[in-house]
Image (tube, rainbow, N blue to C red):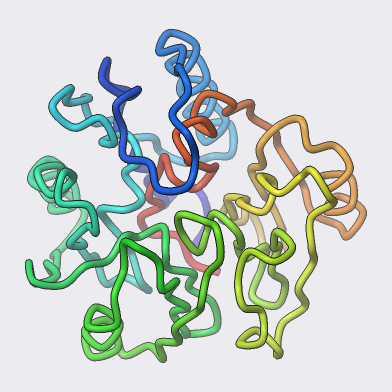
Length: 263
């Protein structure tokens, strides 16, 4: 499934983004105008990669609403509306559900469970789920039953989500911030650690190929040493500055859901 068939679902930045939920970082002032500029550049980078970008309007009642990855997932063609771990985010679901239904049938996670999409890495028909403050074991059991994938829990340390500290570069290689997650469950993978000071680079957005053999990534700009290492392994890397989103504990994957992407 190549890029022309992939939808990147985004949601615009609300005026209230500075009031977003935080777990590990102290609150800092977010420049909303600059955040919107960066968000537009992010959307353009996805278009340049050949994806169809669909943008939902922001809702100022939900400061986290542009972090749409937490609300929806496409697991091998199974569209899932999650039950987010922060109660303040549950009202984001109706707008995302409506958008998902334009793509296909949607399965809604039961309200009594908790799962953020940012805690889920999907590789090799396995869902690795971060056991964070936002995601629980009941949701893991539900995912296994619903998707047919093997589901494995991953212990985290000092990161909001699993994908804050680790992402998949391809089906065999993971990029990880040192000490952020328990890597023992990834013994069958090549785990590449970010350089010291480049921990935010651990969250890379894997892009669908234009043609067989493509290995394309979108990464946070400024982490030159880690990005150069990744490029040296044969990956094509595009960079986007998302400094204002990092102040909200957000990363490259947080701001989109790729629908229809297959590797």
